[in-house]
Figure (cartoon, one colour):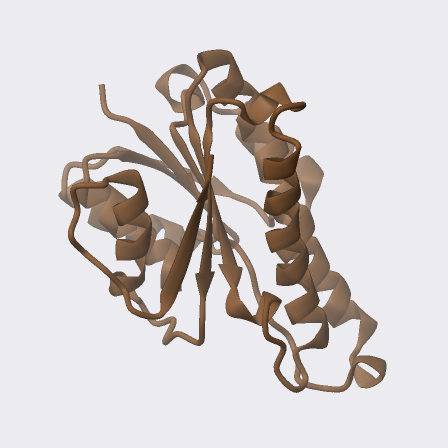
Length: 222
């Protein structure tokens, strides 16, 4: 039976690139996104390559919608082997005190709370099965801020610290005892469809792959 990967924010950019690469590696896919038409187009493309695809159309900022969507997964789709928390965004370049609070709420709800929600929903069944991978897409902006990136940079700084703290607590928190956690940090990318980016992930999930992407640092926390 094929393994299953769930990818959030899969309708474009890095998420779409991950979907194409994981399909190539023989995974069936659960793809989430807000744009149903883009999800449908990607599903058709992947189906043509022999990949079975389950679509979940919801806004990751809406925890209730995310919960309802994940609860619809039955049969083989419940056995998620890889969760890729990819959904994220940046809004505005204003100074923090000039930025519309709606924008920083959107970034916080997407970049941080969306990741926490999906991890909370998917990981318990991984623990039951005693296997699984969680991949969080981060940004070098979490380590080195840029002008106008105040809230965006802070969200990814928190994401990095979140996984570092989980690693420090790994002996106490059995929830992640036998799971591999990966943070992918990326610098400024062309997000049209950065197929090369997913190579960095594949080298972690599939060690035999020789593919590399020079702008990515990855950390395996195990």
